[in-house]
Length: 304
Image (cartoon, rainbow, N blue to C red; front, side, top):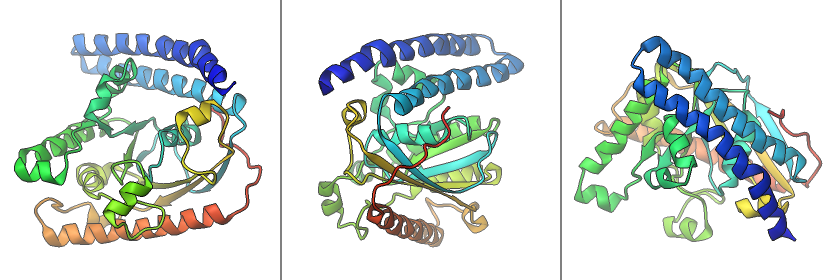
């Protein structure tokens, strides 16, 4: 029955909605590229964003009306539709992305994720992410970078190019700071000092703050917990997720962390890592508290 439900949602709603939104999105992107007129290109940006938010809105409708999943959302934030944010969160599942979009769609600017370069080849979606200027990163290992230091500079340059594009528009830059999804095996391999989290990788956050810190309003620190365990997309589509807990904390951007050379200044890098490690300790404690609260019926975030 679950398999049939998933197949029907995919065939009747999700795939058609994706095609309907992505085809015009790519058409606008092509026109934007072919007509090198600044005013036209600026006019294209809200069209592209509107198409993406409409696609997310359809997914949010399915979340509300085709699942019994409850969102327990705690917000300590004043959200602005035209704000400029760095958003970071822990990462356990592909469902995290849909949860983030459910909470934030049309409440802050479109979330733009740092993506692994391999995801460019995802049918339809890879082209859509490229059209929306999502940064594609190599995500190289420490061993690969040690053999070829130029690989690290590739991701730095990709971050800088993305930040240059984002500086002219309202933006919410999304970063999963752990760099990969949490699993018990990865947690054990890292000897992570946190109970519910992998070690944070602070380089991406440092590069964004260094490139855009003066133009960002604040940081939205998002913590996601699944009382029933980390789910899959199939669990969501199959209506097998009972509750999702989300905590949104708005953090000021420390001025001393905006100006600094993370790559070459060791003292600055240590200070930055200390700051992100403290934030991660707070997040680990928040997850423990969220998982300790008995399940309850909670209001969804505003539907978009």
